[in-house]
Amino acid sequence: MCGRYAQSADMRELMEHFEVTGNSPGQSIPVNWNIAPTNPIYIIRSPKKEESTAKKDLAIVSWGLIAPWLSDVAEAKTSQSRAINARSESVHEKPTFRDAFKQRRCLVPAQGYYEWATALGRYKPKQAFYISSRDGAQLSIAGIWSSWRAPNGEVIESASIITQEAQGELATIHSRMPVFMPHDRWDAWLDPENKDVEELQNLMLVQSPESIVKAHPVSVLVNSVANNGAHLIEAIELGEPETLF
Image (cartoon, rainbow, N blue to C red; front, top):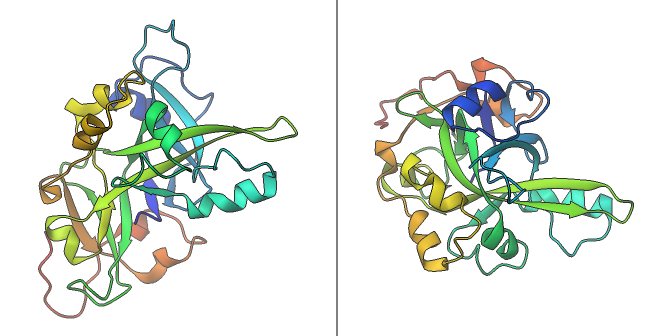
């Protein structure tokens, strides 16, 4: 988790929902119901310029954090698929993520995300599920971002989603889940001056995800990144009674 998600909102909708008053991209990313690693994604972050009076910017970055020590463009882009997620338990320690965690935290908005059942859960292994907000609003997921400059001068901004051990009913599908970030924690999470690791770890604790999200099984079509469209999130019958939340 999390290796695929969906976003159908345009940047104006996201700016309104996340109360963005700072900078924004020149145009929206095309709607994508099957976002995959290295794809362009939206993030909400603190303004880069200290003199800005805005609290939030909307930006477009590449999904998968690039390690700061890499020096080759091809290697950097290849490495992104291995760094789409950062574990909440160790994000402050891992060399790839720790600097970004200290200084460049963000929110990753998602319409919903996909997860595949593991053998340790309640469902048939590899069964795909779509998990989305109970109220139909955007999910707000904790993330980190970074800016990497290649030897040729190319600058690539990238981001990772932070995950934690799955809790409640989500644990019956998979062992990990995204770190959901409630509205009342946004400002503290995005504040670049907040460097208290213990406080930041407390902000990432989510104990009752079933109060935030709901899940339903979806078809195998989502398994291929070549497939896209709203039909990917349509619920399917599993063939026998299952209790979902």
